[in-house]
Image 1 (cartoon, helix red, strand yellow):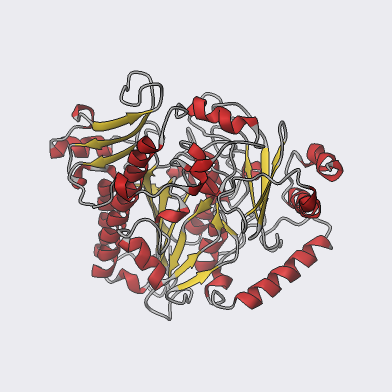
Image 2 (cartoon, helix red, strand yellow):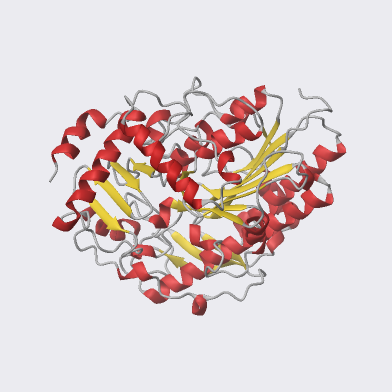
Length: 521
């Protein structure tokens, strides 16, 4: 346990569930996400943050372990019968256990979904409540809270419902996409999770705890169903939703699974009018969560803890929400689900914790699981060699010097090409690119790998056609250039970079894929 002289900063971590990058970006479609915007204005915004995989359990396990999914082994969701691995192996180090061992007071509220049997308590946290049945059934705290408020969860009748399937207004068979609930904001799970977090902040102050804290609030949203309380005040409606550029998707020259997913998800009959309705509720869901983050930030300030607390907001992955005409996520490696928000604000007391320039931004590509190493460096805790992640702390003060970053990235990439590829520790340099993977979900296993630079994205699809996109000329990722002869050199270059990454991170399919990628024309 730390003593009263411990000056290490607290860390307050907000993880949203399936939040798109463009929901909280300045100048984006929502002008009502003020607390998220405030974090950007008072801290640093990472413009190029990406999840290593766009499925819940896998991404959350990567965040916890600092490893790519093929390293920790949870490659699909843990709650389904087809889970490849329902729990993280106990011998894999996690950032939370390292913080706990170093004297941090760890607490957790909200969604878990990182193990069927092993809960936050198995990873150093004290769990405070707020889960639901689908995402682990840890407790029934929220159900009891609603009963006390006189709005039992099971007795509320939804309106404005939108479902997947042949009849979007018939919920007898389809999945609920969006709806309105005749409740107050105070009845929502988002409000309840903020309430638990505020109570924990007050406990830390009232209890006179000497140890620094790490608190994690995992919101249930904006993951579907996009259910908005009837009394949530917002002027954002379907008429404010502009036509998405990538809604023009034709699937011409794309892997067959992409078009198949329209019928699998039950949205092949959705037109733009239906999508506008769903998208409006999705974005209002983000605004609802944003308001609750604002309540928590106010409580942090009211209790004087903003002086010594690092605040972080990100998401496990994004959501198609009509992009490429798709619903939810799947074996489609578009930025809609891989590009995520990431904002970090430092303590107001400049003598505590990392120094972060207010209103700064960073264009360097980073991964979600880089936060595992980042949390440990902030806490002055050594990063385990098993981590693939690189701490972001060195980028906080370099955010305005893009030329130095580019030169540094070039040197790192060059050093990589001359290395033997055997080191995958935190000191391993993976270059100025991000990497992703997917292993399938309910539709069946479908192995994919991705490498993305600022300009290009290459996707390896084992059973089908590969993909190559010029993100500058085609940011909507509508034109697959994989067979275009004028892109042959770029195709070969990115395939080699993918092979190098697979070697460095001990990707188990590298043995089978390397020859295919090297010989592909």
